[in-house]
Length: 569
Image 1: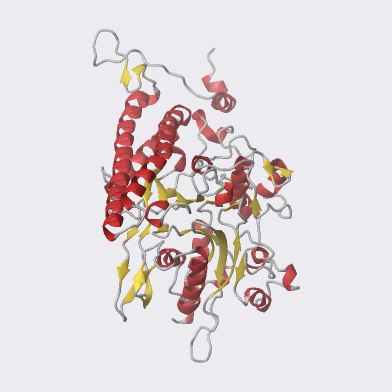
Image 2: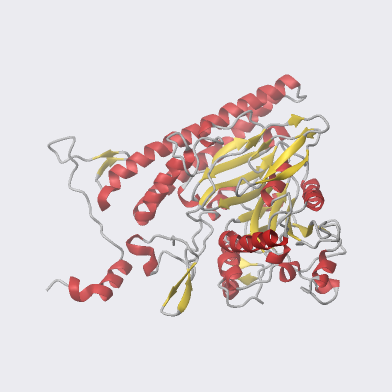
């Protein structure tokens, strides 16, 4: 690749990192911190271009010499080929058949460390590694080996990597490009660190590197590249002893945007799950860090929740908009007349010579899909792994359980059923978007109704899970055979498809109900949920609707802005 093209790609990549660097959110829960002993990892795949569908790759056997095409997950751009291995594992979304989980958030980091000739982008690292790893530790090593052998084609990433026993946060970044006389990149690969989340604790990350000092004397709980410190010294990012080294400060220095757009989401997740006390300090004492005003008042990497966390707890954390905090978007004039906790992009705006932020909460309008991954050590792999899958904005969408040993993906969330440029009437993503976009206009009216349906469905599915597990265990038998394993997979496939289709049908009905009830800013009177009062003369004409108008904040702003014109005299 010529020098001009490399420079152009690096510049373009730096711009892309700025635009997409405030994307995803992960919450990591160890089995000692969860109510039922599950390992739980959440992930919101947030992108203005990503479609909500559930990826599926069956297990496979391959002859020597077979090559695997690598395409960039974000763009579909072909990057190159690598040798396929002889045996791969089945993957469903961000989990595999051995209950291994890998999710991510992009932190960008130093743009000069991007390798324009790399083959392995971060998405390919996730999905190829899931096909090859039986444990979290194996996954960490496979990620490092793939990136080092074939070159890393993305910016800085934080990975959540877990199995049924352990949870890790891994942070990595490329080494850029430095060519020898033969044109070979002598810096190919990554520098990285991985920290095990202590059992009984939780962790979170949201598009900003969070690992600071590394415990080099604890190889059981800390893994890292041999040159993680030396490379930082070589590049002039760090001077000092190994004990003083901070991965985050060297490779992804904090700034206002990293704090307010990223670490604020971690603060909010910790604040919720720790009941307002982070570590041994009130959560409010970290607000100056979260809001971007004091980078030295850093949040801890791991925290102990106030009580053990349920699957529903972490699902609801993914629906947060900073409610009740100084960053609450429902209370200022930007919320409009219906307390809407959303601000359209870009992330910043300028007015009268000053720059202001549009808050970036955990729940966001540009989510493609979001998940809660559940690994359970007390169950065999044929049953233990479940990916709770949702499409679009977590605040107005519902999770549906899909076991990771299914034979096929439910049609409403299957890859190819619609796209960001192709509406599909049978796609869960599109019907979910219909409801979400209607809710954004009348949030204080529509969101509570949607949330009621969400809670009822999710709670019912969670309560039903032990019954489904028990039935699957009975089919599997104490000594599984090929026939019993196949029957178990058939049973869980049928269940997962039925659940997803039922959710789709419910959301389709809900879409129609909300439109009829709330059209034109009116609120039709009801007999009961789904049926409406008529005017007493015709069953085709509604009773006179309610017209609740706007919020007091809206009235205040409008009166101040145009009161002289609008005042009734």
